Image (cartoon, rainbow, N blue to C red; front, side, top):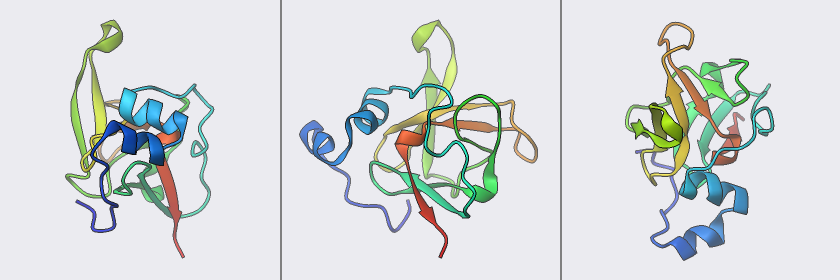
Length: 135
């Protein structure tokens, strides 16, 4: 995993102490922010998006694109292993959930309708991210 990630909390109480209510809802309860409401929907600076829960590097601005779907979208992750995926059958549909590879926090979902070169659209909640601009 990313060398700069912070210590991962071990209890629900610790998570509640370090996360905002919205971050906790999304990262720990698998919630979703409203479409087109996220802070990182449009980012003009170069940099890296990190997990708001543990600091693991997840996506960079070089791989961000405007998908028109209402959440920050990326074509690929910074490094293999920094995210994990699993089948999500909630809400009567099958989707691929994206989780932080370090702390297991819910980030969003990935779809196979993105642009080349990967064809992936990592559709990620802004509240699950922190932005680290390049110096």
